[in-house]
Image 1 (cartoon, rainbow, N blue to C red):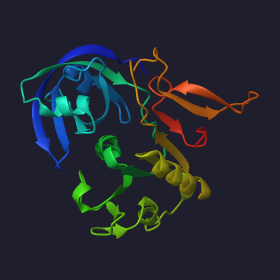
Image 2 (cartoon, rainbow, N blue to C red):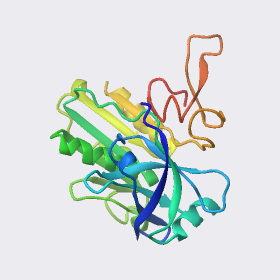
Image 3 (spheres, rainbow, N blue to C red):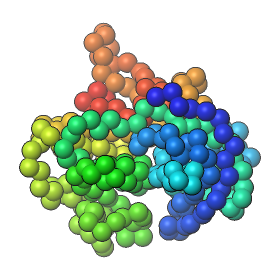
Length: 256
């Protein structure tokens, strides 16, 4: 999808969801009106040279606002989270290919960590279309739980809230009437996505995963966000750009 464009965006809302993760809203009708679930934006990070990529968490088309979640893990994300409303940023987006839901009757969305942000966007879009959606989210413990809605299947490694265990324990509680008509979409840490992909494939369900690689340019030039996918060549794989050919891939194509 070739919607990407450079914008000057304004921070219009800011909310901390826990001690190290904030939810930011930016005014930018161009992105709010064209973004698709699974796409991301590259946003300037204060004094840092490179922009930082963030999955789009929600859009408000009526007011021209899009939302992202920022977990503070380094200087760039710290600087972004420190800004107050009214601050201006440079932004490139929307970027990437996004999810393709097709005509599947049932969709299972699975998220872990900051992966719950793009999963939230997918949930909003799908439910607005009247799709049947199940959501399973996994976190380390209760303190890390964010954007969890009533009706979601919740798991924690610590077991201090929800089901004790990984998201697989949660997925096993979902009643799937027809696996051939069910699509699984997953965003989160690599080990989690690998496990979810294996779970879905064992049941004969198609699975899309969104690879969260480190990125530089976000538009396919710098080649620092490569993902190995299966190939018929002598090596059995090839490198593709997460920002350009992804970030969403068919799980069966990924070389884990």
